[in-house]
View (cartoon, helix red, strand yellow):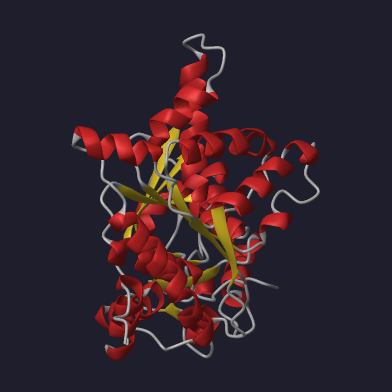
Length: 362
């Protein structure tokens, strides 16, 4: 009997350790991930002169486009793959953050007067990378849509293998977008260079984990922090890493991010000079936010309160799950001073976001 591959072995180990509940749809794609890991680890490495010569001529290992509804375990599987495959010179990044990097690099390249900025940027992105793992591919911006095809074509030519997740099938990317006909070759490129796999598990594991669970804890004492940490371990499902969002030329850093779940302290999001664009980018990049140590708010920390209101509005409109520890109930967080009357709407939204039927799909 053939030995299980690296990814299957890692998945089964997490199941045995009760870190995962086995899911037949997730298990079905493990063989595909095993094949990619084997291909990458078996391919000639850059290094010696002969190895580099053959590596350039070798056909790049075919990647994977894993799509399906929210909460089906796509990000967890990709993170598991990235960690267990052990591929040297690999990178894992959220698609939104990746495209922010690309746009910033294009702006810089254009300032040098080059005729074609995409070529050097793509070469720089591909330099030294054999595996690129992109989480949550979604294209709604025309600026991204107009460059992504040529960007990835160049990266594939450089031998980069791409594994990505998405909530949409390739044919629905940039759906109804302006000048979409110019984008269609990129869809064909995905199908040519990547296996397209629909993860159609009937279960939304993230919703299942939160169904009936308390999501707002006050006061923010040791017991509340223990509850939050337990939820984080359950939802993150693996090793966390910082989420770096590039917004208007700046970096917004979320300290901990895994499996679509971000975790941060109140001060890290509301005590810094962040604005609506930053919170919208955050809401676009995550599915759940764990926000810790919301203080009582008043005229003394008015700027923090104002940012908190903007953050909650962004999360609410994007239907993002919020798990929080706070000094008091939503209604008692801000009871005096300028802005307290307007905060009543925020308190109402915080209450609504705690309800059992609050859903990303609503």
